[in-house]
Image (tube, rainbow, N blue to C red):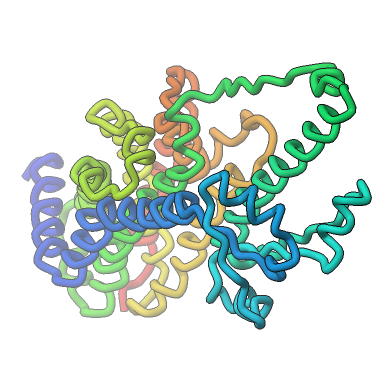
Length: 390
């Protein structure tokens, strides 16, 4: 039997065992096929609810009977005024009230007549996202009322309002449509990374610690084939499972776009076959490296549960590293590309933004993945060669 034949035999045996395992198959389906539609449905649902709240032309006011001038302004802006409940503060804290509340002081009208500036409060709860979102809309509405009053006052005194406007400001956003969309969809690379890791995890544990616990590893080691040949076959099967999940997860976002409930998000989210292929270029080497690393951690364990506990460190690190890019307020540092999981998250974010990455940027994480995969396979082979199987 040649080495290639032996590797293929081990690979075929391991891949059949992995796909036969119901736990692995459920993980594949749940973490890849359903992930895209469910994630996009959840994101679009959030955006659609925020848009619906923004489109509701309603203002909740406490003490509106004390401000007929303000009521008139709201009506001219086609807004409907609703009286605030007496316990609006408690309702805002409990997120049972979705709108910020405008509180009008007792002497509102008298202050306007005197030429004073009455203090109008906008009460919201920053922990209540819906009320926080409506607070900005209400603030702009009240600013419009203030500008109108100032314009009328100047006009009555014969002063042109343009005299107070020395400079006119115009906003220009340099971000592209896809870049603005990543403010909402920037979490997609994280979900894909975790799907690949979760899918490869069960296969990696089963082919190492699982076989040791079942006692099926010892007969395999009695085979005259070299240890690295056996390990390559096992690693190839685990990596194939991880790559399969990567492919299914990336393609699942294509039909998942049909479920987008927000027209704005649907127009901004540009994800097609090109983005799928670029995602896979980044993810496939990562799946191979993660499979080898998980096998290296699990091979030292004697039971499946012990291996699960040991690999928790790898899963935790992989879930925390992408957060560096999320919480980074400045430009991306070059060392990001040298850190597995973080590098993949950075490159996939570039893809979502519609930005191209260079071959040099791609070569660094691919080289790191190759080193991790080689080191993991070598460690597993050395462990099987030297350690006694119990």
